[in-house]
Length: 161
Image (tube, rainbow, N blue to C red; front, top):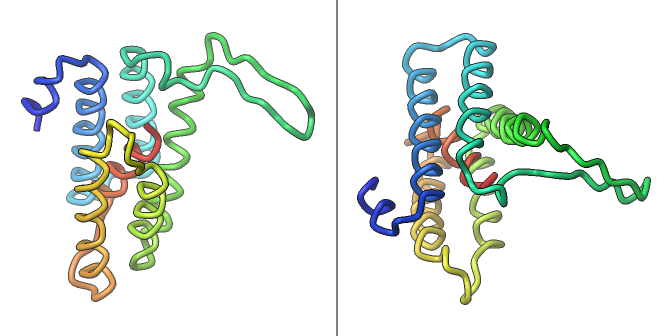
């Protein structure tokens, strides 16, 4: 997989793959060793904060706009930790929703279908991902497999990016 991403010679894809790999490993370690939630959340937040420094700034939330207040808050130096917090919040929410069969996978399929269009350069990633998620959904609904923390971590970061 690394050689697939590295042949594009795009640093952002390599960093995204690296973050995905680290989050996947944290999820596997949590599935196997049942790591305390505060250690897992702290480690994930620290890793995201460090790794987001190397990504292209287009992946960072730089300002928050509140429609009802007609107010924009510029995040400046706190943009990276707040972006990491947003990713961590989605990760935690999807992890809690994973208790019911089919919820996270169905949500992910809907999100990725909304990203899919015929002019999108990411379709080579999105289309196979949707197919794999549909196959997993069938087995997940029949209690044959489950995502676990590693799958939820992976999907939540992909959705965030």
